[in-house]
Length: 73
Image 1: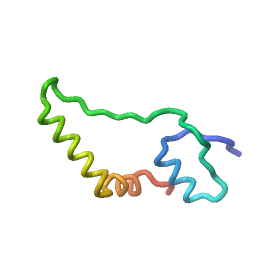
Image 2: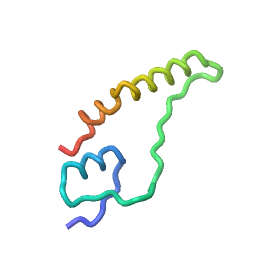
Image 3: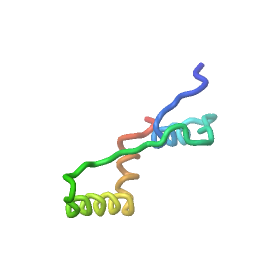
Image 4: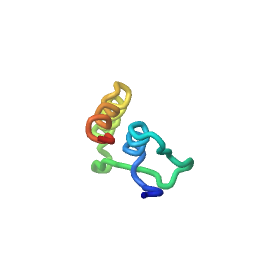
């Protein structure tokens, strides 16, 4: 029997949704952070990356990727 597992939030939510009796404990155990680096002063590229990421979040593409590649199955 396994009493606890520590995994990223997205797959944790998938496992809980797919398996009765599982729960996610309250609180943030760790903060997930990701970044992309560009040359200092290259604001055009930085803005393009930020715009693209926001569009992917807003149109649901990020959620689709999570559902396809980070699922409980």
